[in-house]
Structures are given as structure tokens and as C-alpha cells.
Image (spheres, rainbow, N blue to C red):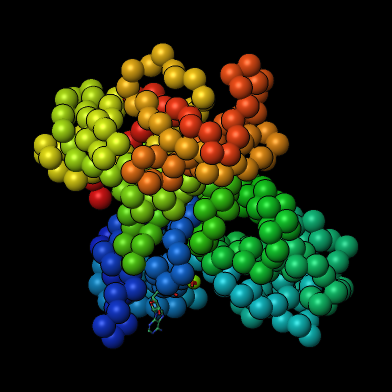
Length: 363
Ligand SMILES: Nc1ncnc2c1ncn2[C@@H]1O[C@H](COP(=O)(O)OP(=O)(O)OP(=O)(O)O)[C@@H](O)[C@H]1O
Ligand SMILES: [Mg+2]
């Protein structure tokens, strides 16, 4: 296989459970060595998709190609794949060392080799001194690393992680995200992980597939999904967004117009759409400026009343209500802008954004 071809590919992969389509014609193309995230809310089909990759669930239809080979008919234990489950139950009565050794012994590896691999894995996850402890004598993050060591011990070529940090509290989770990425990258294993936490996906993955109702809506690098979402769902799921609903009233290759209740909005890209079609202009809160003074700019300048202000140290968030009642979220860095006058509750303000700040969404 050349390095350019995908390492793992799904083609029209579908799983139906009597009546429910859990995974719906999913096409994915995952590169060797990549950390790839499946992101979506509860019940969207993430675990089912992962279980099909592992071989624990048979597809209703579609193909799974690993390194060019169709593996749909291959039983789980013959796939070079290891899956760490949503609740990564460690064996409570076994020591850390024996937990990691468990799968290797079952495979019939010689004890010298078991020892060498377990020691190597515990070293990798920095738990060499904890081998004799039982799982309940470890912190949540340490238990998580034991589970990872156990998954990596068999040297899978594809590592599947279902909500790897789901059992950890927020603080520990953020810390462990980086550790996990470092370990996975140092081993060089291709990894597909499942999460419903967009920050976790953005932090850990090189690319993300956003799923909803069994379908993949968009695949992209974190910044691509953030800057160029292809639909309302993705725009809203990844970060915060303001949606200005309207109709496409002009459409050129390099610009277009969206006519809304708030007036005509200018956009610095074309959409190759049909005039008058319903669309939404998506603008991120940090791309909107706000002031009590009218700006010099002519386009995309609106007025409203400040309803809420939240101070977050480095930035402020304003909720500004337009004449139509729409509440617009605006985030501004806290630089020295005091000369323009402090903005307070109930102030009438101007808010505006650049033509290239927004993205037009059809779906
Ligand atoms: N064995 C099963 N029998 C019937 N329906 C199932 C089965 N497994 C999953 N489903 C259904 O398929 C859909 C997708 O489930 P899945 O577990 O893949 O979701 P998920 O994205 O992993 O959700 P969560 O984030 O809550 O773990 C759900 O509607 C679920 O009820
Ligand atoms: Mg799940």
C-alpha cells in the first residue's frame, strides 16, 4: 500500500437494529497513524460504528477495508484491532501488571515475552511503579492509563477508543487528553476514538467526523470544521455561532448577499446556489465587533440593545438583542478599548463584522 491510500476505509457502512438505522451509509477514509474522532450527541451511532470496526457487530450492509482488505467477514480476534470500551472495566481482583498481561497470556505468549511487553507498556504510560497495585488503589486517570496499556499491549495496528476519558472529571480529563495523544503518537498506532465532547475531539484528533442520526455530516480538521462548517448542525455543534436566517438574494463567484429581517448582509464568498433559496449566514461570536460608536464600515452593520454581559478576564461576552428580537452573542478580547466608552446593560450599541467573517449554510 502506498502511504497516500487510506489505511481504514468504510464504504456505505450501514447498521439497522429492527427498524432503527443506527449507522447510515457512512463513508470514511482514515490515514495511517492518524487520530480520528467520531463526534456526535448521544445515540447518533458512534459506538455502533466503532463496534463494527472491531468486529463485535456485523454490518447490515457496506464494506470495511483495512489496508485494502475487506475485513467484514473476519472475526474480532483475527483483526489487528483492539477496542477500549466506553466503560473500560479493569479486572478489580487483578493487579495492574496482571491486567495488562491478561490478553497476552490468553494469546499464549511465552512468559518472558509477556514480561517484556507488560513492562514496556507500563513504562509507556508511566505506571512502572504501580504494577502491584489493584485498580481501586489508583486514581481515575491512572486507571484510564492502565486500560490504555492493556489495549496497546497486543500491539494492534488499529486502536479503537470509545469515550476514553468518559469516566474522568473535567479537570483530569483535560490533563489526560494530552497524555493520551502523546502515548498514541509515540506508538504510531492508527486510532479511531469516539466522543460526544467537542473540545476533546478538537484537542486530540487530527480530523473529526461529525455525526447526527447515524450519518456523517462533515469530516475535517478541527479548524476546518470551525471556520467552514457545511451545515447548521455542524456550525452549532462545534463552538458557538450566530445564525442569521434569510434568503439568497445575490450570488456571484466571489460574493453573495443574504436578505434577512435585519437587512441585507454581504458575504465574501459565493455559494453557487439558487436565488431566493433559504439560507443561514453563520457568524462566530468573536468575529463580531461591538461599540457605542457607529463604525466607518458600510456593510453588515446592525444595532441592538445590550441584554447581558459576562466578564471572563481575557474576554467579554455580550448578548445584544436586535430590533427583531434575535439575541446575538458577541465575544470581544479585553484590550484597552475604554476610550470608546464602557458598554453596560441596556446600552444601544452598534455591532458589525467583515464580509469574510461569515459562512452561508444551505442545510
Ligand atoms: N443492540 C442494539 N439493539 C437495538 N438498538 C440498538 C442496539 N445498539 C444500539 N442501538 C441503537 O442504535 C442507536 C445508536 O446507538 P449507539 O450506541 O451507537 O450510540 P452512541 O452514539 O454511541 O451514543 P452514546 O454517546 O450515548 O454512547 C441508538 O438509537 C441505540 O438505541
Ligand atoms: Mg456510545
